[in-house]
Image (cartoon, chains in turn orange, green):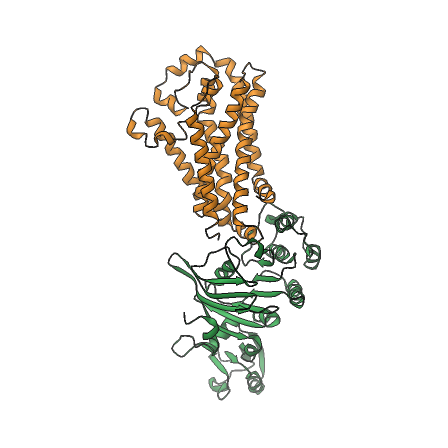
Length: 265
Length: 314
């Protein structure tokens, strides 16, 4: 692993990362500020009047809508958060290999005495840092701002949320990085990965009315994302941790293996 | 094979598209090899195979006696590369690039400051603010600042003004004196004449010819355009040897190619009339090769040693 490559990779994305982290912090504040004025039974009545398909669109129906977890899952962490953090991870991951090869800057780095494996592992390390930062910013600011608006997350739940959130981003980013290691052009890599996740999301919604649409089955990363359950003091199934962990590990290891063997121009 | 830079039957296909095919060449230690060819001939593909950026479909590339592999990091510590198409990080400064490459090489850029001064480059400016020439200077600094044993230079003076071109030639000559081996891709005859010992031309992915610069200079080809002060009869150049592609462009104007050592004869014939304007330019090395090695049916007749060294028969 090369700290020079990690630092340079993150430095290249400094502007977009700053906006994403700042945006997440702002969104967290907005949601905790919003919760006391609309949350609770009033919100539950409003949400339950919606058709289940629409509820599914905004983050599933696993949680109780009258709770803090239900509110945050529907309004923030279910769909919008996924869009924000996955796009941040995809921007980094798509450029990590495919984008830099297409831009030609990969040639500058590969002309130096650094092995492909070291370069690839360092890019993966950058994604791990980004995943952790996005998750920590989201849930850390929820807790921080929440103190002023009576939104409290238990310490154990907070740790679970940060850990599972980071693992979810890493799995999503890992899938994009795998595509990035296989194709040429960052736009193509990001587009393919985004399309795959959009398909998972659509499959999750349509599966609510037709089991035939549930073609991702137990490996649908989107449908497994239920942070509201954890916010309400519960736990997600161990299978969720395993799923995100295995997808992240396999996709990242595969992306390193593929990059070390492919043409880089 | 015992050269510092070697290709043995090097072949690279992009799917069904040919990059290079059966390329065999050898560059001895301390020499400067000029590598020439038209766009799409396979020059950059060859260079990228030498650097381990591309994986050959067949054959092999060797640097400093070691086979080039995609993961050959240690080998690249001894190689400096200046690409033909400069791709840098647009938002970063020249200084950032110098620091980045130095950290990757885990070595201080021993010659960076000297190169910055000699090329009159401002490293504090962002790449996106730099002109083509200044980007070229930065690429040269990045490729040369660690005083590598092997220099792979793809059009190193492209975009530079004559003064800076001269500085680059001086630097290359100094590096060669210090023992460096140079692989230089170029289209400019004067540039190759100035620094190269041996020249190879690649055409359609194959080494079409290979020759020493000394032999090549004997075949020097020039583009001549002359305008006389008064109309001249079409047969004015009759009997002058070494003229090809003779064309009368008007009553007073002729253009032609002058081969090898026949310039003296041509000038003497010109002196028999009053000349209003005269232009004599060196043809590109590629044109020289094509002029001398084009067979009558339009194919390429190779010099005697090209078949053995060139792999054109593959």
